[in-house]
Length: 303
Image 1 (cartoon, rainbow, N blue to C red):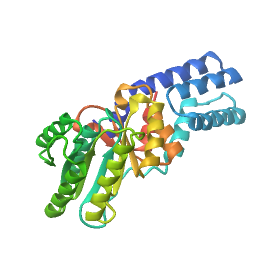
Image 2 (cartoon, one colour):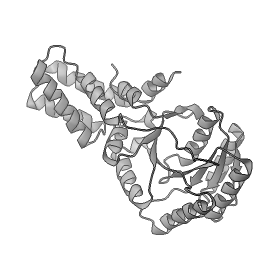
Image 3 (tube, rainbow, N blue to C red):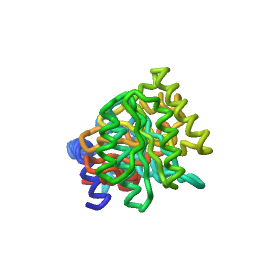
């Protein structure tokens, strides 16, 4: 399956709801009235595109209608173009350390899919002929260590781990030591799920980052927040608060295949200006894909 086909399949629920609503509004009334504009606005907000993006799309629709009337007016194409324009500056590439291993810290609340995402990122880099190590630094959840080890066995990727309840910073230290010794290209650190409001857990994350920063200058080179796409605007609140607590370098949005709230990707990027690095569109290892703004916008408003 090609990348666009994956985007289209993954965003099918969001796309179906959005296009159905907009077409229903437009076909019912050939003229663009204040009431139909308000309905379009509601449809966009219901897909969690956020107020700023919705306002931008509605203004563009209104401008197009005033300048050319209804003849040949394609509301979906206007929305697609506005989203594409808004996301044009998004840099999806993973950063690369100037020399030695690139260390990527994977953070977020419980249940967003951090462990699976770490493994899928390792798989993605394997397809780019890069060498990868995984570090099981979620030592709170016993199942997380086993889960990462299972993924490691499946992908033939080494997992640096310790016992349940071990000091996460100490596991991260061992993982960096191993990555340096093996001259690994990338090291992914799977951290424990934590709420930004839990001061002690945020302190633990800061300690972990300090420890690896002492071993490799500038590490972690990426701090990626994993968000669950099905939580809609709650994900925006998480991203906002996490970004205050830990300087993030990018976002990964998972579980977009099971939700009609896929627009939240646009809302988050527009408000925070943080790049969306990858989006999760299914269960398989290659269902985590680098974010492509043009194909995302197309899949969202494709008829």
